[in-house]
Length: 152
Image (tube, rainbow, N blue to C red):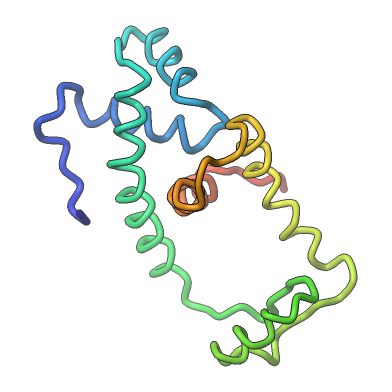
């Protein structure tokens, strides 16, 4: 499952990667991706895009996470969260409880990072099951964060 192979697929790897990237990077549904690819002369059905997203999305996200985690050579100076009690025990278990900050309005940056996901969920008319939500969120987080350009 960890190996990324495009063998036995009718389309070249660049088309598959572009379709998966479009789906997870922007607030598009499968039919929107189908339309974008059709505009570029590539005739695929939305069902094929769905299968590609399910098959290759998790593998691509896993590879992106490995590349990003290796580059991080430092630990964070502080960890900012809201005042939910379960964070304390989790941070204590990780050994970074002393760096936990729950100051007022310091969590705004973290809360704003959820906005693209909330917009996406609204367009998808909510998730049908916890499993489908978890599957989508695990891939969306890795892909969106890599390609999201922040304002400076």
